[in-house]
Image 1 (tube, rainbow, N blue to C red):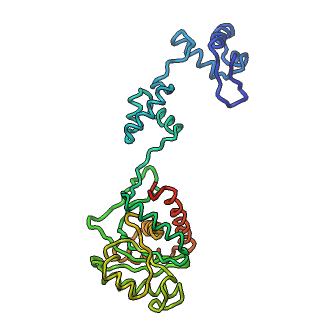
Image 2: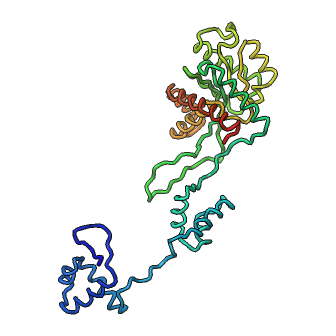
Amino acid sequence: MEVENSTESEPFTIDYNTRWQVIGYYECCLNQQQTADHFGIHQSSVSRILSKFQVSGSVSNYQKSGRNQILGSNEECEIEEIVKKNRYSTAQEIADNLNVSKNTVLSKMHELGLKFSIPKEIPQLNASHIEKRLRHCTQLKDTNIQSIIFTDESYFQLYRNTIGRWHFETEENYLCKPQTKVCLMVYGCISWSGKSRIYIYKKGFKVNSEVYCDVMKEILFPFAEREFKQKTRRKSAGEWYLLQDNAPSHRSKHTQSFLKENNIATLQHPPNSPDLNPIELVWSILKRLVEKSQPKNEESLSSCIVSCWDSIPQSQIQSCIEHFQRRVDQVFSLNGSFY
């Protein structure tokens, strides 16, 4: 006989025969507490059994509402087949198909190691891209990582809305955005030992080769001189390397001539490979910091970008570069692919 132990808090079951014994004992003594003490169960359990008997003439458990929560092996296989055929199937659609509850499907999908998430966007690669990625990673493995200056541009948008925030359940969680978008383009450099001053392009200013070279004079050259303690124009090739992406203003004849005149050695960056420049990770950090600061206009956005850039510790930049080094090893193991 399985009965409730009144001194314990674990879930319990009173079997079918014992319930009938409870009815018989109660009809003799007509006292619920005395009946409960006799069987070692709570008085409330006796009350429920009596109530059930008086209403239905039975002591069996009521038929529970809802759909069957138990999935057989066939249904489990069917869940896998549904997901393989259509990766965008929702748990509710699968539940309706199998005539079970949504929670049952979610629980089983978790057991099967399935996860529902928005796909990460990655550039499409062809055979030429893959070959150039592998060649670039080979070059990086042969280069002292501490001798590379990583540069890039990035856009920063006012009222960017990509991170969550706390709010009470009784509050609405809205972010009011003006119709006119405000974006600023910035340029920066990082290396193992430091970061440059951040440069913010004037709004609406077209970044052509001439403008880009002027920015390098203002930002890259002083940074390289400070980090490597030498005049940029007088340095010998190979003492430090510039890594930049393949933006039109970067690979134009004017820019390439400018770099050659100033004796700046470059590492050829492969196309469609943002994962092979660690400054992309730093941009992500900076954009989150700026978004959390909640600038309200173009002026405050500009000043916020500068202050947040200055606040990023060098140890965090070094972590990004270390992650980049691991990514280079990963590219080899993936034969040049993203995944």
